Amino acid sequence: MSSVSKKIVRTAFVIIALLFVYAPILILAVYSFTDATTIGQSGSFSLQNYVTLFTTPELAEMIFGSVMLALVSAVIATLLGTFGAIGSFYSKKGAGNFISTVNQIPVVNADVVTGFSTCILLVIVFGINKDSYVPLIAGHVILSAPFVYLSVMPKLKQLDPSIYEAAMDLGASPAVALSRVVIPQILSGIISGFGLAVTLSLDDYFVATYTKPATFDTISTYVVNATKGSQTEIKTALWALSTIIFVLVFLIVFCMNYMSKKKDDPAGEKARV
Image (cartoon, rainbow, N blue to C red; front, top):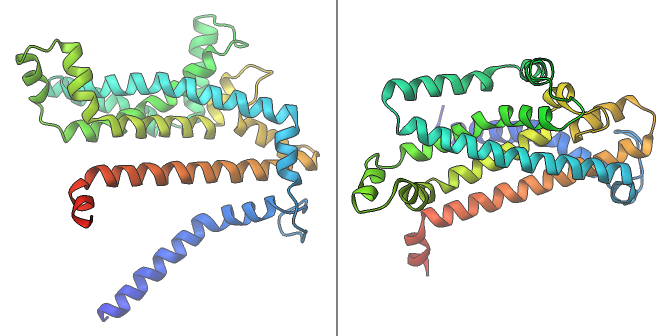
């Protein structure tokens, strides 16, 4: 096979893969701007789905609650995951390997097991009221923190292991050396981990199902319940919500990649100028 043929095959494969991943999302986005009630039905251009999304108190309350839950759990998960990664990196080899191994268990474990076990531990064993938000937040932190760890650890491995000790040798306290030397070097990994934690919280269904209060719904649990009902306006408004989430995630990822590339290639930017 010639090099031209190989290039055509690779390009075709990439295009097919992208279409397979993004075509359903793009179709949903198109239908969110129509008055069609089902996917595949013809309809005219309309913004009613977006109007319904932003004017229905039930939907607004659900979105606000989901975003607040995602931010709170992501902050806690980012702190735990970051300091867990730092502790593992600067620990002895045996302890570091043990922490890394334990961290991978929640990653490969089924979400339904995480949600059910969290509910049993906090509600039944410790007696925490299930109508509180403690089990829900704890479940999302358990779900997200290991992924923050995995985002931060590669950045730590790019550092010179002696940089922390060198800072203390120059008179910095452990806290100062950590906050002014180590954390700035791994900040991009921390930000990536935080973004991943927010996404995992917004996307989660099983953990929220077992740990949430009866009167509270996340985006995922609300969507599942809405698809079982008969409120057509609510169902189609969720098309608009899905489109907005996709656009926001796309913009965030694009901006993060652009800023990372610009930071990593300052010499190239100056040379082009």
